[in-house]
Image 1 (tube, one colour):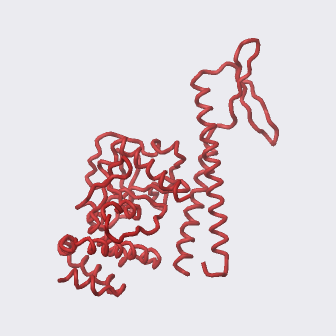
Image 2 (cartoon, chains in turn brown, green):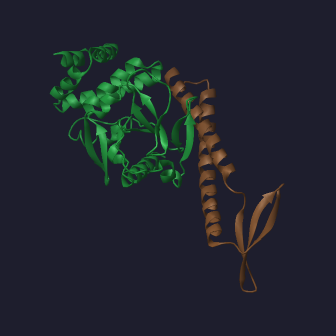
Image 3 (tube, one colour):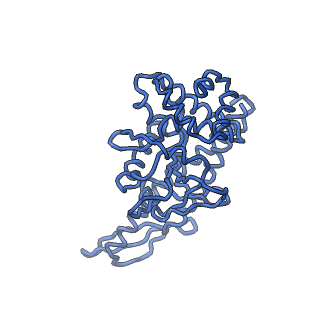
Length: 105
Length: 227
């Protein structure tokens, strides 16, 4: 029993380290996502983000192809990291509940 | 989850192979066990559970010619760079897998990461790893060519490491893996090979193996090795 618990404890510490890592990576990503609006046949971009609980559109005007791609990539990474972070959080929850339990693990 | 983990492992290996990293790396640790299955076909061999860690041994001096940023290579799979311990050993982390690089430790013990500039990472130096690098086999995992330690070296290394572990759980895991592979080798009639590797080891290392086998009450195995 002690052996399994010590394995779980190590897994918990790894998962907590990983959780911190994904939080760090998410905070490093630029905030918001680019939204394209077509006005009189021209493409204009707005940065859509949440500030103090409110959704804001910040006018960016015409942006380079490179920046559009950058924001697309950021969006992809944000989605991926959020999904993995939620997986890690589930692992942490599971491991904590197993370690708290009095029954043999 | 199991399947995802295996598929992710194959994808990591595929990318490392494509980048030319696998040519100069030996896959070690518990992930060798499933990849030994082909080697032990026809023998009673069932690999035990794999851990989340997937370890690569880079024999020194590292012969990797081209530069590869391994963390960039794995980034879109969701791997992030993590730092382990006070020393700051780099680990590529993912909820399913943790990729680590290791090098053999020679001379006086030092607790510092060894830089691997060719891979944009650092590695942890550990004792006895040269035993894993000195005799290797190649296996195919799907379309990937993998270099693994010869099972005899793997088994004896696991027993040495088990005898030095302070944590009982880890020691038990290492012992179990070592014994499993050792017994499969004997069933495969590779006793001469195992004895050859054993007798080539320094006397101290041999004593550690014998001590571990005694602890596990494997007197038959001790007799086979010492015969």
